[in-house]
Length: 204
Image (tube, rainbow, N blue to C red):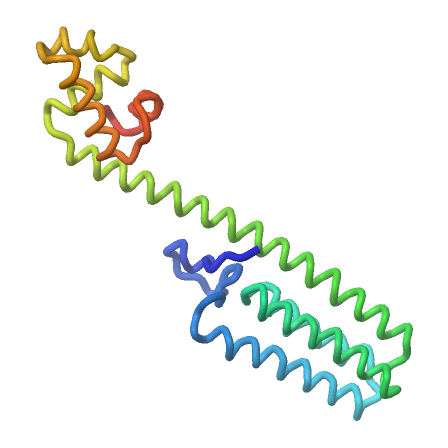
């Protein structure tokens, strides 16, 4: 899981940052430091107060925030600090072993679930953006077609061969092939087959 793309890359304003929303951004380091700082505060609280479970559960907040917002390395660093603070608290006698095991299990399971969900959602957003960009490129390309290229594209999209198109438009077969290549280039298509599939969507 490695996306630098947060949901804010989708071009919409959001009240909450999307998956990997800070990955690769300048403020990511500060966010990771803040998560670790909160975990250390939870650790200190566990040492000075008998309210073990309530304070331990607070460690989930920075852990899950890191799993949702940060890149792989920093999210892993936050997770290691989270589990480490539980182990150290147990070693110092502030938490019982069963409590540490229960909280560590909760940390690991919820952290993985959030991380996997963030990765899946980030990939979906990436694909959605790619599709939108392709559509914009294609629409712009259609506007750039010459009259002759549009005529050739329309006939090609109907399944006519280069020879048949040439006969209808009274141009050479090689010229038709050149026009088809130019059309595909302008529309961001790789082959005539894609032109046939995309014709209706592009209004050809």
